[in-house]
Length: 120
Length: 108
Image (cartoon, rainbow over all chains, first blue to last red; front, side):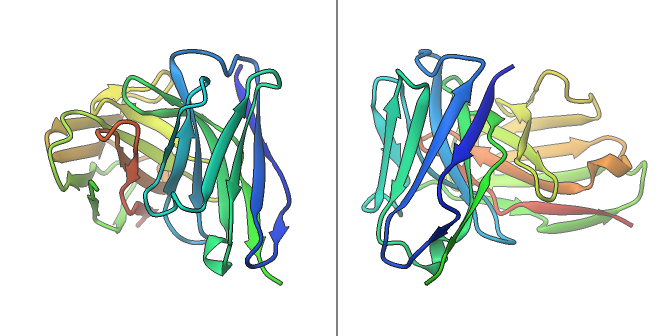
């Protein structure tokens, strides 16, 4: 059974960089059938796609966040990571990692999510 | 960017009712539309992909239809465990994604 687990600091100071890692177990991140993505959800609000990465390293970002986002993949560790720079309180959210099918873009496996709070 | 307009934003219904949620895309997205269920404190769960295909293990009371710009999600007979927020998600601008605003479903 595929599992995804987010890890990283739960508290980040304003103007600093948010860094999270998603560890994939029970399957290979190097499959040609999937993208691996980050999605976030501010408290009490809806879902926002942040970006996705293919195992080859090709990346795709939400235009509204593109200038601040970097997603990378480490196939040797079966992990992919998110960096979001110059954070503000508006970046406070639950951050989810997910497996995304290439066929219809459905996110069929999700991590449990991790709350990141931006505060001094 | 493709915008998704989901309605209603909230809905109250009785157990056994037929429930319908709509999602409208700002441009033609063919059938690249997925539906998710999110319960409080949990990650979203995929219910429907490719507009009308039921994900494995999802009860058959859930269904989806539509193509182009107009899509519908239906629960044929509402059950207490269906209380959740439902989201549509488009996948036409490969591989960019947009979610609808969500529909919070409550029991009357």
